[in-house]
Length: 353
Image 1: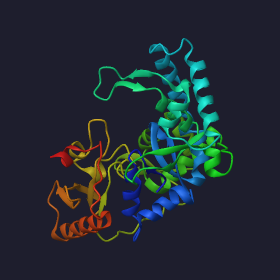
Image 2: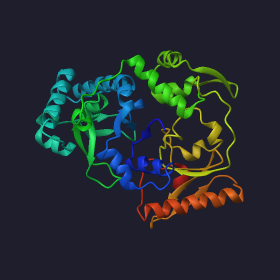
Image 3: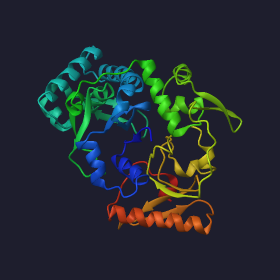
């Protein structure tokens, strides 16, 4: 996989569980917090991802930098609108400098930073008139800004593996080296190269959506990768030049993937694996719920009962072999979770039914 979605922390563990036989929670935690070979970074489409460490410089110079610029403009505008300052840029520079100064002495949580730093005091209103809007503390927005810039990182987690209670840490301290971003063009080219290796063939539309970038950036990155145009169901797709061999068919397989799994969220154009089920498996904002896969297509979702047992919710007829394989996966996941219930704010209509 190129990156893992980490908007909800449990997605990281469950996405890896679905792909790595015999994986334990402790091994995921070790990669995240001890080895730090996987690192959380705000990037494409203002989404929190887990990156392999070697891919971070590409994101810092391209997708994360784009988010940081957009977020800076939003925060400074909201600060002025809320009456916290006349000069939003000056306010945000002061606030970010204060946070960096405090974290120089060691990791701190958002609540601890708010208590120590008067520069983080205040509230702003976001998205008035919407169901997700309202009056919020400004402090987390400052953390988001610094996170997008790659200057701080969500470090050790004080909560359960399915709950996010990070200690904010200077990125330099977390990695043991100063972050050095790639040039924007090189960064986008590397992200596109990794995406094509994982998800290709895919379209320029898929890439532009996944990156949250401009069409021009995608076109330039495809050229820099020497991507090859291929036919794709009447559309134009792209593959890497060393990935053109015909792929042999594989035996039917079953999988249970979590909310916002990177495969489900890998393409914008998803009909080839979703069929008619998009409305049942995504919420109104385009967030994917859990999915149940048989033979390369999504055929339903999965949920847990109060005891933590995993149950299938199939949306179409599945052959007997498929039902047996999916039930085996449900039993295996239930055993792995050991009664732990994984909540989500992104429940799909099929999950709620």
